[in-house]
Length: 362
Ligand SMILES: Cc1cc2nc3c(=O)[nH]c(=O)nc-3n(C[C@H](O)[C@H](O)[C@H](O)COP(=O)(O)OP(=O)(O)OC[C@H]3O[C@@H](n4cnc5c(N)ncnc54)[C@H](O)[C@@H]3O)c2cc1C
Image (cartoon, rainbow, N blue to C red; front, side):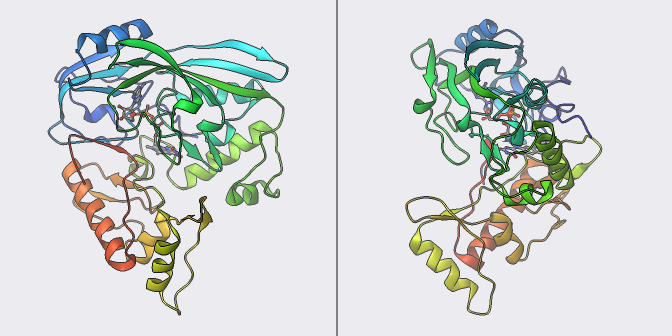
């Protein structure tokens, strides 16, 4: 199994010319005006504070696995986050609260808690990047989201120049988003996760995972079995970083799954036509439904391996746009635009990008 953190959070290869490309999983992006590597939480606050109020451009970069950085780079200070540390801060009956430094490699943390017999994040195995970035888009996979285990996020607030604790209820967690996403106001310093001492996983909610485990949805399985099976499923889709496999040189899913209200859902079904297969969907609350972006993309004519200029849809996963080694951010975004517009023309549904676009636009 490839080391999911090998490319990014652990192995820092900072070039003297401030190139950002080796610091992202897409291997794309120009240069930063200034690049500062921080390994202590206090240093992180001081560095960001030193950049002035929230108007001054600062980019916090950790694993670089959810950013698309423009070919012109970043006209400001990039703070490369390499803080480390996990400590237990509370234990009540079976519940344990762990405070995790923002720069801690996420999958190393998941492996460690699974090994220690703590459940709550096992289905989030194999996701690249840092623990501190998980609240930014409420990281989720295989029926689990970090919003289910995060109890508080400790942030530096650039607007008030204060370090504050934000309880989960203030974080605005929703599907692949939070108050932190697309905001320059907060720097996540540490995250508190509440996990449960248990030999078994939380109930498996994702049908594909349950099938692979040979259990029913709602069943529990040994923690390490849940982790291993998720890692295998992810690897088969190129969703585990592998420095030798360009199918993994991506930001994971490039588009979120669209959430449609009742009218939009009726409109989509009308466009598919009576002879077409009904699009798969899941209830998303208040009468809305979530539709898989991959289904729409494939039926709009964009198949695995569909290529642009040095970039392509992964040969393993329709939702992953990849750099084949000679791509540019411009080419990646051109491919993304072609797919977005093709889906819109065919189905009337507008796809939105999941990663944060830095100094570039779709
Ligand atoms: C192969 C692959 C598979 C993936 N699979 C999944 C998946 O299953 N589910 C999922 O949800 N995501 C997935 N992702 C996306 C990505 O791994 C996650 O979003 C991850 O949490 C990003 O972490 P990072 O440290 O790399 O963040 P970065 O890319 O460094 O940063 C992402 C954004 O968060 C901001 N940010 C990062 N750290 C901080 C901080 N401490 N304070 C303030 N802002 C911060 C950055 O400024 C940027 O805007 C995948 C990516 C890849 C490449």
